[in-house]
Structures are given as C-alpha cells and as structure tokens.
Image 1 (cartoon, helix red, strand yellow):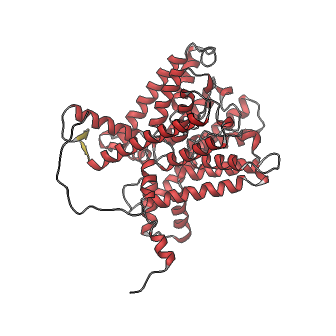
Image 2 (cartoon, helix red, strand yellow):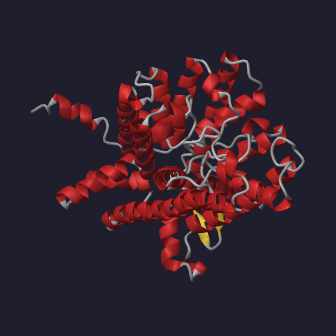
Image 3 (cartoon, one colour):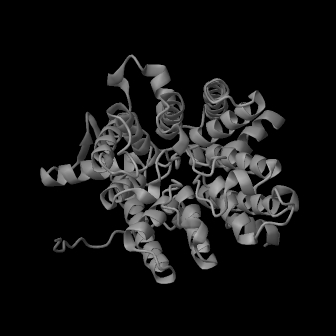
Length: 452
C-alpha cells in the first residue's frame, strides 16, 4: 500500500476548521509581535521589550485593547499602523480575509476554504459564501469610513486640531470602535470627551453595530420591515442587546451618580450620557470616558457581568455572546416550567445548541476562575480589581482599573493566554486541541441521577 507523504499526514491532523482558525490567529500574533519588535515601531528607535510587543500584538489581533505601554506615546507611526492593521485583521477574522483574497485573486474557492470561512463567520450555508464575505468587508469599511468622517469633523471643528491630526485620530478611533478593540491614541482614552455626545455617541453606535454580528445586521437589512420573519438569532441578539444597554445604563448611572471621582461633577444629562457610554463599552469595546480605577465596587461587579456576557455572535464583540446567555435563560425557563423542549417563539432549539451554550458558559467560567486565582497569587491587588482585569482580558474588552502596566511578566503572559482563548472562543479552542472527532456508534443504557 502506498504511504502518503509525511507533510500530507501532518496537515491532515489540522483539517478541522477550529484548528486552522486558532493557528491563523496565532500566526497573526507572531507576525505582529515581530513587527512591533522592530526599532522602527517605537518613538525612541529602540527595540520594544518582547513582552510588550507580544502583549500589544495579542491585544490588537484579539481586538481587546489592554495595553502595557501607552499606544500614543510609546509606539511610532509605523507601530500604530501595525496595531491598526492587526485590529482590522482580528475584527474581520483571519479566515475571512484569507478566503476573500482567494476569491479576488483566483476567482474560485475550494470546499475546504468555504468551511473555514463558514466556521469564522458563522454563516449558515455555503452557496452564497463569496457574496457574504464581500458584504462583510464592504459593510465594515463603509461603517468605519462614516464614523471616521464624523469624528474627523468634530475633532477639527470643536477641538481646533489640525486636519491631518484630526483625520488620523478619526480613522484610528473609528477602526478601533467598530472592531470593538478599544485602542486609543490618548493616554486617558476618552476621558476628555465625557460630555461630548458627538464623539461618545458616534463611537457607541460603531461599537453596537460591530458587536451585533454580521448575520444579524444582514438579516435586518433584508427584513427590517418584517420582524415576524426574523430568525431566533436576530431576535435574541436584539432583545438582549437593548435590555443589557438599558439595564447597564441604569445600574452604572445610579451606582456612580454621586461619586465625586466619576459621575459626581456632571449634570443630569451628562451623567446619563456617561452611563450609556460605560454600559456600551463594557460590552467588549474598551474605551472609557471616566477613570475606571475610581469606580465603586458595585460598578465593577456590574461591569464584570456585562463584559462576561459580551455582544452578538459572528461579529467583532467578545464575551460568551448574548445568544449563549439567552439560550441558557430559555433552557432554565423551560426547565422551571417542566417542558420537554426548549422553545423560542415558534421555534424549537435543538439539543446540540443547548449543549454548545452550556459548554461555552462553563468553559468560560472555568477560565475566569483559574485566571483570577493565578493573578491573585502573583500580584498584590485585591479581588475585585483582579477579577475585573481577568474578565476584561478573557471577554476581549480592554477596560482596566490601571494595573495592566504594572503587572509582572508572568501576569502579562497569563493575560495574553486569556485574550487569545477569549477571542477564538473556549469551545473553538477546545475543539482545536482535539486532533480528531469521534462518533460513538452505540448507545449506553440510560440511568438518571440526582440533580441539586
């Protein structure tokens, strides 16, 4: 019998789309780390510390926004351009970009490439994948361009910035916002614009739009006049997005209403604006218009919950996703009512979806617990601060109470692992580590056990 070449046997082990996605993101992080390690990438002309380059590249590719060094003052124009490209690549997805380039260059696409892009974009079918990918890229670029124009005009007219500087800041923040990255060229993020609705609401809109997920956006574009035809994904995403924004705004505004270091000096309308912006950013964007380190403990806890849930599936947001949270809520409701099936509206949710939601939630909780334990063991910070940092990293949010830059190298490495795992998804990561799928060809006898 003819043996297949060694390289073919090795590549066969990595044919699972989850594996290729994980490898693709790892390669992007590696390339980004190499580019940021060049002397050209820093303003001083000296090579960046390897951990700073690795941390920044991971944070950019995973569209997180946590930084160990200030983006605007430490990295040169070249370094910031690299960060921006990594954010764009991470937001669109490595496999999406690779498949798009294949289509543009060769005008054809193989079946395996279709499956890889489908796994990254969560598209339902394979027939219109080429059109889906084009619409994703076009939608992303147009959205970023519109946001960049609004920000550029505002920066140049209201803050007397030179047009070139205003344009650069507008483009940088537009790309960062739409991709839910949270990188800013300002050391204090957006604290200086806390009372400016033109800037904060524009960025909030970009974050929400990018975080809804491409399937939801495209379905709304097609059937926005016919809500009765919306899929379960769209209904859950929209309902929970609105609910979390309203609830998050109310909780954070009330919790910080009289805090003299955050919302206290603001007027009533400005407090509501700051609360809405904070509630939006905790859903994996990472910008902040008030000092996060000055938030009260109850605000940090509420932010932890919002960050952990995250945004919509197949978009630029992180967290376990609102669809996962919503499905688990429906599972709980059905169990409390004694129903044998989980129904959402007039649709029944298959058991595989329920297991996937449970697996994602439990793996994510486990990652946060382990990460918090390890970070507490190697740093002197208190629990609420450490938990906030871990959730922010794993949910690829990018908010920080200010401890990121003072963490030891081993803590930075831990956050790198959490950001990477959170971006590609705990279930995807677990699938990527399994070298082959196993189908059980028999059923074992059933036995019930006591629960609770």
